[in-house]
Every structure is written in C-alpha cells, then in structure tokens.
Length: 256
Image 1 (cartoon, rainbow, N blue to C red):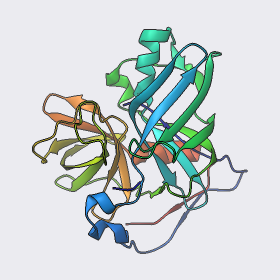
Image 2 (image 1 turned 45 degrees about the vertical axis):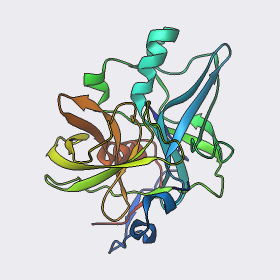
Image 3 (image 1 turned 120 degrees about the vertical axis):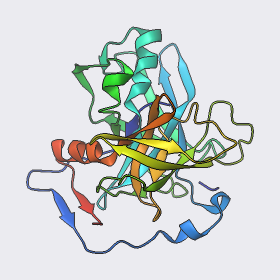
Image 4 (image 1 turned 180 degrees about the vertical axis):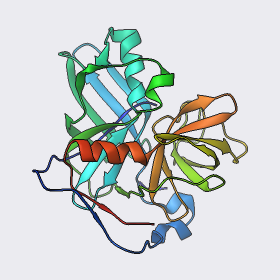
C-alpha cells in the first residue's frame, strides 16, 4: 500500500459556517485495488518533547472535511504522557516541541501539525473507560505532503452487522512494507463509539490504536480505540462531527 493513541487537524472558520450536505455517495475508486496499491492514508505518530521523542506511537491519518485537511489520532495516547510525564489533562504541556505523522514505510512523506485544536487544560485524561467516549484529538497542519491521502468522512452511524475495515500497523507486525487491512463486523452501536468483532484471521489487533476505520466505499467511519473482552472498541465519527461543530469548522456531509 502507498500511502496507538490520539490527533487530527482542523482549521477554525468564522461564525455562520457549518455543515453542508450533498446527495449521493460514490465508492472511492481505489477500493477495487489490492490493499498494497491503496493510497497512503495510514500513518504513525512521532511526538517530540524537550527531553524525549516518542516514535511509532499508535496510528494516525488525515481527514478531508470538504473544505480543508485535518490530522487525526486517538486521544488515549495521553495515557502514555500521564504515566511517563505526569500530565493530567489534554494538554501536552510546556515541554512539547512537535507532533508529526508519516507512513511507516515512507517516513520522508510526512506532515507536520501546527495546532492542537481541542487542547484543553480542563479536560482530565482519565482512564480508557472514559476516553473511549471521546477518543479523538485534532490538529491544524502546516502543509499536506502531496503523497498523503486524506480520507472523506461518513457521519452516519455504522449499523449492527455492517462490515468495516481498519487499516494500520501493529506493534509486533513482521511485514513493515505496508499497513494491514483488518475486517470487522459491528456488533453494537453506542453513539460516540461502537463494538466490533474481528473477522480477519492471522493478525492480532494489538498496537493498532488510532488506525482509520473505513466502510465498504472507503469513507472514514471511525478510529480503532481499544478492546473490551473479545470485542474491539471503535470510536465513531459521530464524536468527530461534534468536535467540528464545537470548534466552528466548515465541513461537507456527503450523505448516506
């Protein structure tokens, strides 16, 4: 393919800018291709502080809002900062230096983030049981590398029984040449997240937090958040939509 944890990009728009809809949804043309020929949209995180650099920390991706490009990953990456850096809120702190994303197989094709939009010193990090209900963070980006592909977003909830695909790298993945596509089936929709059953055999979901989750048409429907028992927790784009509305970001809902 060309082209665990927390972030995505947003540009703040002025008042009066909101959601616009258009009828019809077309399948992304690359969905018909083998996975190794899909565009580069599965990324990893590199986060730099004054004294430490975290590499390959979860997965990430870019989002096409219809008017801008955002960078995204999972918010529960802050649990790492809570444990090792003593952070207590969704704020990387004064020692934070940079956050960038790139495909593991093409590290030179990177995008730099500019601003953590939902940075919030009043929001506690908490544990996974609370973070799974709000497991998105969003960044403005400095510029988008032409080789990286931002995913279009579907805001309609995933239905029970619907099949979706998570695309990303795992901690102990042997083949690093391209990310792995894993197939899931939705078991229960819970608003800001849904439970899904893994259908793919031969791979483990471990270490794939932040992986983009797409539907049969190639539209983003969530990100891999974690696991409870034998089920995977997938953060829904319903919460992403809430963030876009909260921060006044203009977006186009392609409709379903």
